[in-house]
Length: 287
Image (cartoon, rainbow, N blue to C red; front, side, top):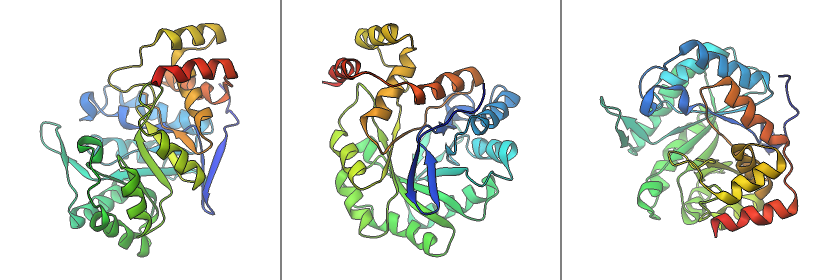
């Protein structure tokens, strides 16, 4: 498959990304823990993503942990000049693979240094602060945590900052400390609670990265989705991704896969234009 012409989003003078990105989480072992089942295939997926023209890879050192970042370094370093790696901090893993929130400012800064080491970089393009709001649904202050990352931005270790799993109020609080270029929250056809935040990000030219764009651990199930996909001669996954891209001009996607074939299928969705009647039908899924 030849490289596609993918739509891009410019967030800063030094940050233009393809709206169709690639989420590297699934390259780790089961439960996002340990080494991949097929290391050669994982390397192939990363290289194919770049070959397809994707310039936006989402990762974190707590995928593995460290496994995915080391795979990215092995596959792609030295990195192409237009490739932007977005990582996140705010959690650790225990020996059983459990996810342990870790938001102490000193440890957040330590996590940044670990990402730098395992990716083989001197500066990280974008670092997202992963908060507990996704789990707890609260508006707790993130000023201390975000401020710790802003300090590293001032030191030149981070170029841009983002947020993951946050509320509207937390975005406003973070912006009082430093610019925010991306928000990464749960959003898809069936999970529309963030509609207002999606619209706000578009108005402020903040990339909204929808995680679990295909439903996550519980894949989207909808007869309406199936019917639209059948009518358009596309897969249900392609239609769900295309809907997201048409939902907002600042929407970016980071679907994950450990399969080259599935990567191709996802990327084709970037060229799928949904007619108005299809969008109207799909909009009813989240109501």
